[in-house]
Length: 136
Image (cartoon, rainbow, N blue to C red; front, side, top):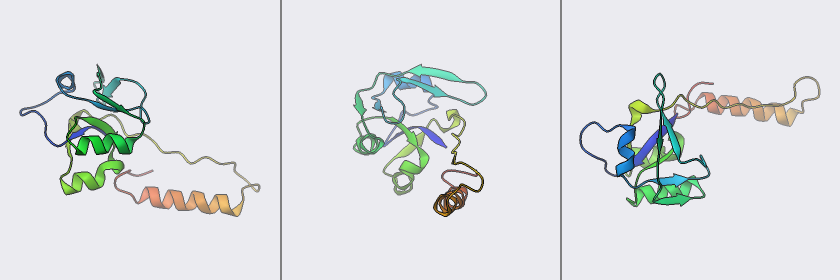
């Protein structure tokens, strides 16, 4: 699940994605190199954001949001601890995109090594049991 925006405080009322143009944006070129942020599931919309700060890693983006420098957009599992501790607050959750699938790919058949098979089995088990990622 991808959270659309996170920060320490946000506008009062019922914000929409279009309200992002009035806020400082922290972009991560690691997650999405485009400044066009997509929102919604049934009714999709795109907002062209103008970042105040662009970071090369999601970790730097999250740190900047925790420091109160603006709104950012990252994956839920990356900020679960900051959300739980109250360092960050999720906003615009009702406008989230569809969850991104996770794929584990390998060659099938007798040529698959035991190490590859063990990794795939472990990855499926761990990802399936992670409520921050969702079912596979």
